[in-house]
Image (cartoon, rainbow, N blue to C red; front, side, top):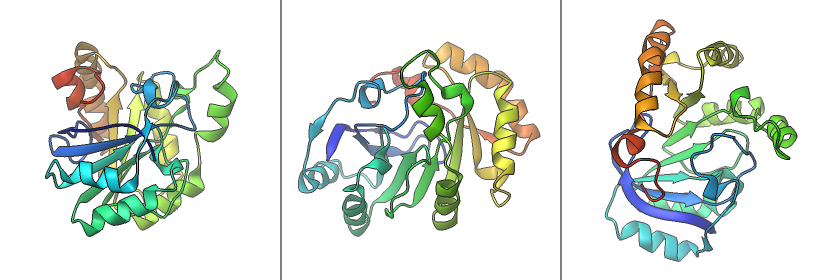
Length: 225
């Protein structure tokens, strides 16, 4: 597997925010969000090839129950199937962070889905058309929410983005509003706090939640955190 980084930290987002976790970040992505906070796993993929046995041994060395598999887009990696099966056999709680555009029959305790809104498209780049064509895969979303425990995390840049989230969610009437989380788009703590100020009442009015981004609050936007 081509792995960008593997480290121990705390989950910064979503249901398990604040939970000590081992992060396995795959390298490579089928999208190119202009605001990507890990460009070293998407725009300029970096990493090294590691065997399944090596990955499992490193994960176990941290003696940590929770494992987060992220990217890039980890669901592009076929070897994710045996990796997640082995992690489950070892007793780990597995979260997979995905944009919901690629489907694999992986093992996961929580499918953390971050659909990419139109605010993610990198206009003016060679990736603009490809990104726009790939970012919305409703058939994949239906399979994921039907087969896994799940949460949605929508990156919000401006207040106008809220209407697009409403339209998105309306296409999937079975989604529990309590599983919908909004996240402010920012990689600086001060801007995160400012956007959270108007996101929280907007989310509450719709029965949604707001996800923190603790890793940025605690460590800044730094690889390996």
